[in-house]
Image 1 (cartoon, rainbow, N blue to C red):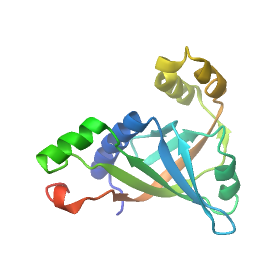
Image 2 (image 1 turned 90 degrees about the horizontal axis):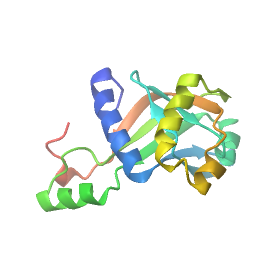
Image 3 (image 1 turned 30 degrees about the vertical axis):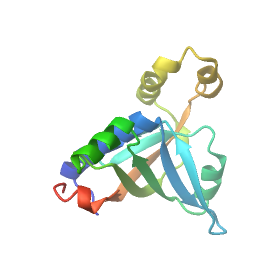
Length: 163
């Protein structure tokens, strides 16, 4: 489906809830040989206008695949046990359980100070850990993306009331 600013607000809400529950989203890309690859990335941010950016530090296969084909699918699914249990008890979802975003990733570029601030706020609660220092201490480059289309994750019998 095509993006407009009204459904973008709903998409952002679903995306944020999914990323909060999972601490990452999955980005699908395809190699020159046609082999699909899923890359989990926890530093994806959506802007207010159908665009976003992600910090790209460790995704070697994704970077390699982008040389041939910049098209990606970013999949965010809310895996919160409370969300799913309450949905099953009620027999319906109060919001979409997830969304697939289809777009094109741009070239690697240095992150702005505002982008660095956003990632530092996201990782703040774990910044004191050894693992955080090992993997999140050097976020310097981002890739921007524009979302062209989207598809909801659907379970029709529990979602008839959602648009």
